[in-house]
Image 1 (cartoon, rainbow, N blue to C red):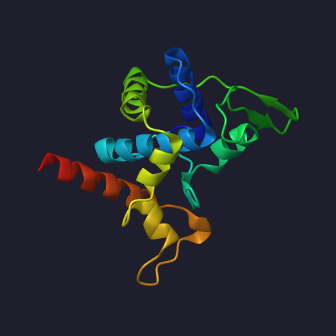
Image 2 (cartoon, rainbow, N blue to C red; image 1 turned 90 degrees about the vertical axis):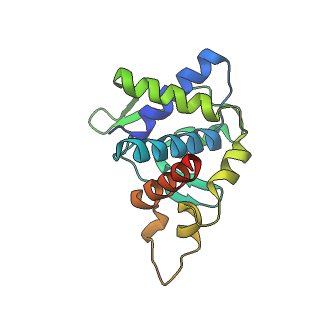
Length: 165
């Protein structure tokens, strides 16, 4: 599993190579769809950080806060980490296997033509993970609005089964 900021940086590098601008909202949704398909295909997460059900869809707080200064504009930097020992921010190179890089590229190309708003709307689907956390049924409680990985995996498996029939 990987830090969400590493996945964001990888996607931003792919986007830069194709000349595709990516906003904070879009990067969060792209990672959400990437992680969801990864869970469905490999039964494990690509990202170890947890998604939260925010107003405009699933969000990874580390990614959001890394890029919030860009607002709705295209992201022009890469996510950094803070070293408490040196009290300095630094960029860390990401390390993905060739298979992971291929998967990230494939999912990126599958969704990149959609606007951030369209990606957000897709993440709001009724009975989807975001909806179930934002509008709990049967007395369910989701602390801090965290979207459980099981909800995400089960949702993407349902989509896959519908597509296969």
